Image (cartoon, rainbow, N blue to C red):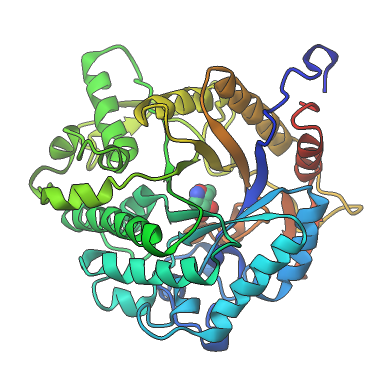
Length: 453
Ligand SMILES: OC[C@H]1ONC[C@@H](O)[C@@H]1O
């Protein structure tokens, strides 16, 4: 803290401070105790898909170390913990039979969190589709909306009264753009025709789960979107048009239908003959009212017109004047403020928001040195983005909480363990956890409600 900012960044009473993870990225033991395979078991074991041939077979061994990790959350002063459930651990075939040992893992985790006064925020789906459902077409099969609602019902009923805040789907855009358009993520398809269909079914599944939650659930439910604001590379008309195409394909593709506006006009231009019309009843299902919306935010982009760039005909221009993280993302905290103001407007200012992921990957050593991990770049990123979040609240945006990505260094999907986002370091040789300087700062931020910023 510097004297002139003392107390300037106090957060509202009741603001919820936590950290986030996802099942396949931290749990390991993905096939243990009757669990079924997910598309990430298949994808990570397919040679060539994963940096260094990494898989989630062990990850952070959280499936076995979850008690130790709850103690870690206490040391970080966390008030909440955002995690996801592995669908195929709970329902090995994705439909029908429940695996008792699979759901027991989450039962013990939720009770363990509650015993420590940590609020569980549960995401139903964070990318690890049961392989058995992928064999039936997965997100390309319209039946998946019912399969997903049935899966949601199992959890809504099991955790009624204990889990009060639910997220249906994490980052529809990444699921579809990564898994069906560019093939960089599971299930590794590359088709604009499939992307339109998968994206629509992801949205339908969200709507079906919300509808089922209203019948059998208790608490609040919403979706989690990744939004990356697009700023034009110049004031040339072709760059603004490129910006709009990029914004439509990433930020509006899913937001607009959820808000009852249908797909953005520019999507026809982006996908051409692959663009599909769908029946109004689908859009009515998709636009089910929800109770909150999660924003996963990392960086911005500055697109220019690029006729050869598929499918948006736009390409981001590297902003060399700013720092970039290990994932090549520009550090630009004010853009977070802009996004929160934009999202507040786009959702009519009525939907409570939560920053459900925010963080940064920097080089950290493979093991602690003198019991410490000094991560000054992550400390700076965390401080400046919390200040930017505070600025958005000051502009009237209703943000209820912040979940740091991530509690632990973990499997960064096809980038493997090479990118470390954790506020806690994991030595993947020994599984030893060490709270990084950024984690120590975050614990202080929580204790002082931001006063330390
Ligand atoms: O890339 C950083 C994070 O972005 N949001 C989804 C997470 O699973 C991922 O690790």
